Length: 98
Image (cartoon, rainbow, N blue to C red):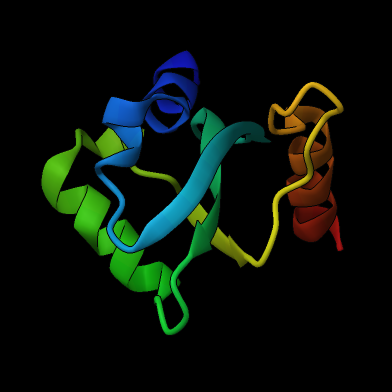
């Protein structure tokens, strides 16, 4: 999952997203693939999650394309100004279980 995190966590990686303001990917356990990426994205109004996945699918290797894209108005931030990945991972896991 490091490749996914690096992909979205860097300036170069976020260029794969269109009409996004901020994005990050967390790895979530998967019974088939061991771990899959869930992307959390702050995007322009009217952006479609499926369109974001399609856009990345055209530009990235299949294993780097997030399995799920969650559109958000804000992302949880740590006091130091970084995205709170633990919170995102907990949220993605809860969504799968719930």
